[in-house]
Image (cartoon, rainbow, N blue to C red):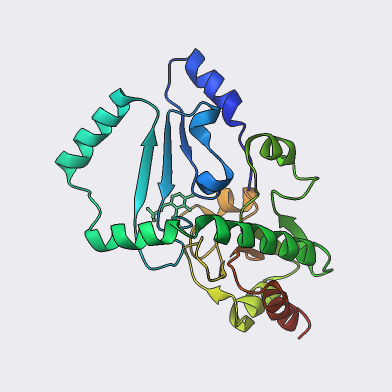
Length: 231
Ligand SMILES: Cc1ncc(COP(=O)(O)O)c(C=O)c1O
């Protein structure tokens, strides 16, 4: 949950004659437009917010020049990594509701992050929309929303496990960016292949959880967490 200054990175890349590639999956073009900030290539996991319903696998590469488009297009055709028609349909249909979903997700995530931060059992909440987050000012400058991703460190491994086992509205599942809220245990899932020492250094310990906030009624989501915290 760190924020990179895209315009500054673009200036640095240009100085060294490098291409800047930005993964815009978390914010989507609705909240952030990296090419306008100087990126050369923008990639998206379309599986996440663009599709938005946890039912399609897709990816996007967006470029800022005809020359790059030609090079990538050639690779795409020769490697054959093309989307099937059904995935195209699902992603196109998903994108129609992108702004509505992102506005709701942005709203819900802020409420949940604030609720989590107020709990005594929570040691740290990583959420870019907090004014005291180190990347808040950069984020305000380059994006129009903070998205739906929150990471949290709770006081004990036991509490982390009881949250994963106890939630009913949040689902314990990997992936992110869908209409359903998901919760993951990065230590065992996304970062299981990172050596323990490196994981710990990055704060990904046995008390650390990741939330992808969806579009449910926010009071249902908070109630879901509250029930487990109060147990
Ligand atoms: C930020 C980000 N970029 C890219 C990916 C890769 O997405 P996919 O599994 O759709 O290739 C993921 C998810 O795993 C992601 O979280």
